[in-house]
Structures are given as C-alpha cells and as structure tokens.
Length: 332
Image 1: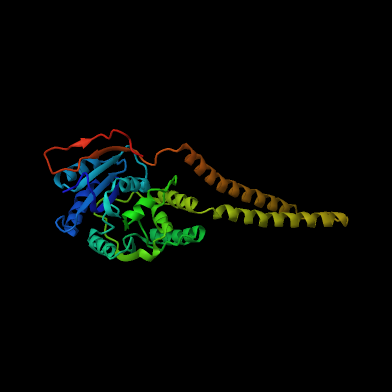
Image 2 (image 1 turned 90 degrees about the horizontal axis):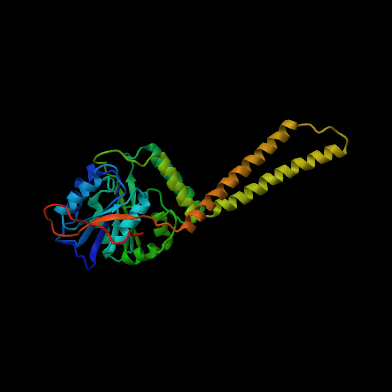
C-alpha cells in the first residue's frame, strides 16, 4: 500500500502522452515484475497533456491498484519536463524512469534494483537490439550522441535513454538543475558518480499499441535543446569559422590591390561575388547560432515554470469511483 507520509524503497516514474492503450498492460507487467509483497514501491504515471483518454485510464488504474498515483499536467510540456514533474513528486530511496510504450521492458526492473542494492547510485541502460526502432532512428541517434559528446564534453554512449535508476542523492542534485529545456540523461551523466555507476544492457521491447509521437521535428528540437544546454562550443566554432572566412576575404582583397597597383584590370568578378555570398552566408549562420543562445537567455530570464500540475490522484486503497484532488498550488 502507498505510504502518504513516508518514503518507499522504489519510485517508478513514467511520462505518458496519448498512451491510453498501453497503460493497463504496462501496469500489469510492472506488478508481475515487482510483486508488492517483495518490493515496496510506488508507480507515478504522468499525463503530459494527452488529448485521448489517457487520464481516465490512469484514474481507473489508480482505483484498482493502490500503489499507483496519477499526475496530470495542465497541458503538454514535453517528455523531459513531464519526467521532471514525476521526479519532483517521487518519494523513493531510488527512482526508476522509463517510457510508457513497452519498449523499456518492465522485466528488467528487478535487475536495476539489484544493481542499486549492490551500492550503485546510478544504473543506466543500453539497448542492444534496435530492429524495432528502424534504421533511420538508430542512425540519427548514433550521430546525435557522437556530436553531443564532442560538443559538450559529456560522454553519453550510443543506445542510452531515460530508462535508468538513480539514487535519492543523485535525484536531489538533479532537481537543483535550472535548465530552460532540461536534458536529463545529459544532466545525470554530468553529475558524475562514475565510480558508483553500473550499466545494464537490454533488448528493446515491442510497442503494445499505437504509434510513437516522437517525429523528426521533435527529434530535432530535442537535439537542439540538448546541445545548447550543455555546450558553448558552437559559439567558439563560429569564431574560428569567422576568422577563416575573413582570411579568405582579406586574401582576395590583397590580390585585387596588387593587380590594381600594377595597372592591370582586375578579373574575376564572378569569384568576387562568390566570396561576398560566402561571407554573407557564414554571417547569417553565425547570427542564427547567436540567436539560439539569446533565445535561451530570454526564456531563462522569464523564469516560467517548467511544468504545471493540474491534478493528482489520491494514493489510497481501491474504492468505488475516482477520487481526484486539486492541488492548492500549481506546482512548478
């Protein structure tokens, strides 16, 4: 049974967006993997502003299973912010985060917990089979982690995800981050704890129902946020790129002056126009990079909450009907 005024051993946080068809199966698999009599745990299901009946299914799950609690955000804030909302409400001595589409198999939960009990403060995972993901997603993921690791200096292995366990000490430090657009797997790695970290390999499960809403646009936005949050190297690269193109332009200028001083007609107007076009192209790229960082600063100065919790289900014994409370304050 859930313990409203005490901690539990394990909290499991799962952000959900339009996953109504997967919730019942997911809860069933978690209960099967972690019998409540053997592991004292709570399951936090975070509805990230779903437009289907995800929330009503969460309420039904809460009524039938006492250790499940539902958290509903006031609108869609994005996967990372929804995950952060769940982490902020977790009471466990350790917290496991995972996706709700069954691709993070609940059958691996006991192994994660056992590695934590052995003294590891972070237990990350690495997928070993990617047939279900498709070649495009697999390749883009591989390229992203290589680019991110090079730009940020924070080494994240290919195949990493938000399927992990972190100790309460790590969670406390993680919640101190004030990034505008959080990139939690990068933040966990940045915190360190390398001497107390284990990695569990797993095979990606099949999505039970529905289709992933994580399209190319969301992937690009995610990559952009991650890189800008953890690296200023694009700005430094811009400086070197600017110096290189300036050197080309000055070389062209010196060439023109020398020919003019010798009384020769300066040929190559096409190349001159080409140089000008190149310089303006580089300039606009640099302005775009600077704009990304300025927009991040602008958003940070507004100090808006990363998420707003609309309502939370009561963590109680199963009863007839749903009991939902409205929080006195919108949490951020």
